[in-house]
Amino acid sequence: MNFPQKDITSDICSILKSRKNDLAFVLGNGINRAAYGNKQDTSWMGLLQELYGEYSKNELPKINGGMSYTELYDIIEMHQKDNVLRTHVIEKYSQWKPVDFHQRLFKSLKEFWNVPVLTTNFDLNLEIKDKANDNDFSKHLMKYPVEGGKKGYKFSNYYPWNSYYGRVGNWKQIFNEFSVWHINGTVNYKNSIKLGLTQYISQCQHARQYIHKGNDNLDLFNGKNVPYWDGINSWLHLVFNKSLCIIGLTLDANEVFLRWLLIERKKYLYKKKINHEGWYICTKNEIKNHKDKKFFLNEMGFKVVEFGKYDDIYREFFDL
Image 1 (cartoon, helix red, strand yellow):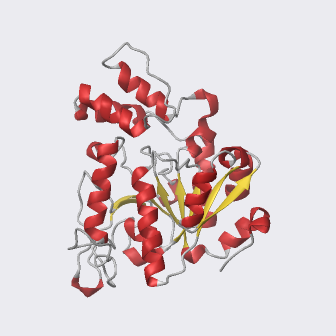
Image 2 (cartoon, one colour):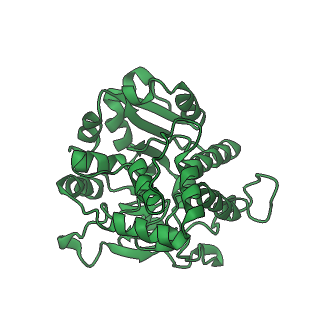
């Protein structure tokens, strides 16, 4: 199903509503920027400055293309033990609490959209305790045996990819209703936090074991191309088996792991002739000087949908 770009901005919500049975949101730190405004520093650079200040009084150079944020984290890690940095990150993000914006976003995601949510955020601002459903909505592990005799993804506190917030259920239920999954780790598991380039590469290697199982050199998808693959109980299954709508995520070259996954996803969909779509929601100002990013997204099968400002995006999609 293909939609003309000139019409998609005004019709995008109607388009996605019609695809709820084949849709997952990918939400980035933009939701926290919108929620907190100027009241709280939610930037990646702000965090790195804090971490850098733990061992050095020198001023950090401006990140301007000669170094990535992920590489800077690795540099900081050379001077500090990894556990010290992770503890610092956990302490920072554990202080982030949901405000009214998060409450309304949660309600829209759960009650109106009712589709899975993947997030690159470490915080728990989307995992709000719903008083009306205290017994249903909480943290769970997708560890149930699936058809075909496979047990699916095994739990690891380094890669807790089968840990989700939502109702208790099996993968068929959970992947077709509201649930929250953390791509780069969560404050619930200190070892899961991934911020450096080395950690992102490790995530790629870990995911590859499930996608291309038993083959180190060729992208044959022999791990994924089976009815009940080993990643079926993890959020990896959503990436390859849903149309994706990305909101509030810069998705620049720092996002090594997620961009690699989008490449693998595109290769898999093309190889198997599967038609899952993608939408990248942003503002005109965000994308106008980044034709290369727009090219990348288009090649990955994502339509770039440009709004005038961020408020328009959250009002249109989540009535905020």
